[in-house]
Image 1 (cartoon, rainbow, N blue to C red):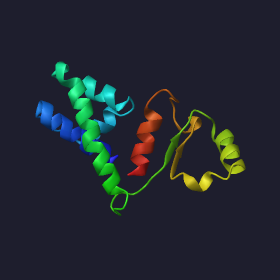
Image 2 (cartoon, rainbow, N blue to C red):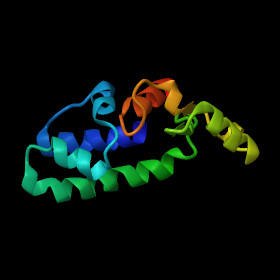
Image 3 (cartoon, rainbow, N blue to C red):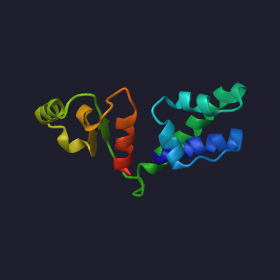
Image 4 (cartoon, rainbow, N blue to C red):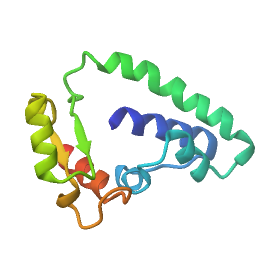
Length: 126
C-alpha cells in the first residue's frame, strides 16, 4: 500500500496541490487506480495526464522497493466464500502458508462486493 499511496500523493500534490492521509486513501480504496484519480481530481481535463503520472511514479518505486526491508510483502485474500469452503480449498492445494491475511464471507457482516472486507484486510495488514 505505501507505494500506491505515495504515487497518489504525488499526483494529487502536483495537479491539485492537495494532501491526503492514509486514512483518506483507505476510505476510497477499492476502485481501480484510474477511477480513484478520476473521482478525486478537481481538474477533469488533466485526468488522463494525472493517471499516466500516477503510473510513472508508481513503477520505479515498485521496482526499487522489492529489495528494501522496510516494505513488508503481505498477501491478503478477501473472498465471499465461507471459512469452511476457503479452508478446504487452500488446504487441498497447500496454499495456506502463502496468505498473511484472509477475510472470508463469514468474517464480515456485509460480504463482497461491499468494501468492509477489503478495509478489514488493510487494517490487519498494517
